[in-house]
Picture 1 (cartoon, one colour):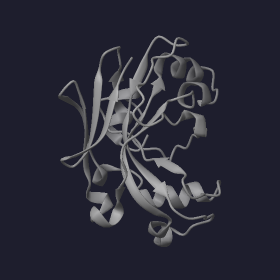
Picture 2 (cartoon, rainbow, N blue to C red):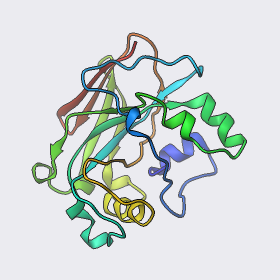
Picture 3 (cartoon, helix red, strand yellow):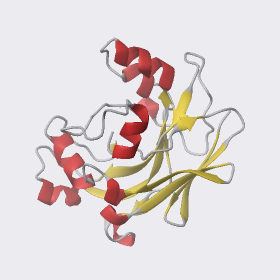
Picture 4 (spheres, rainbow, N blue to C red):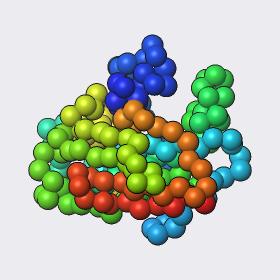
Length: 198
């Protein structure tokens, strides 16, 4: 919930949360490299959500925002798969999102790019193509909360460890996946993610 246009497409009355919305995924959610995403059978609709993903490179807690950039070394494009109909039921019941967000293989990760090769991380363009057609486009300058704000905020509650991954929110354009789709994620013009849906 870090891009106003996406928040509006999910809930027309919600544009800006007061603080970053945080949920966790277990390590079993990370989809192994070069593996397809197999659509599970416990929900009727699974949506793609393309996001900038930050890789934590050192141990830290209670990190000041001005020093947050020292705690990550690379970024990529990832997919936060969401069991959308299950999420709707959980929201209506005021229940946690673990089941709709943290299930096995729900976090697809692209190839990481060193931050030194990218310049200003709050000026990154990224997009997701499905079968050669762009379905999501994002610019990190549109983030409600910057990468450094998210890292600092999360570290107030969780000790960040080397190898932890932080998904930073998705822009508008999310939608359902179906068998046979090819998802390709790009940082600028650089393809970093290639994923089949089965």
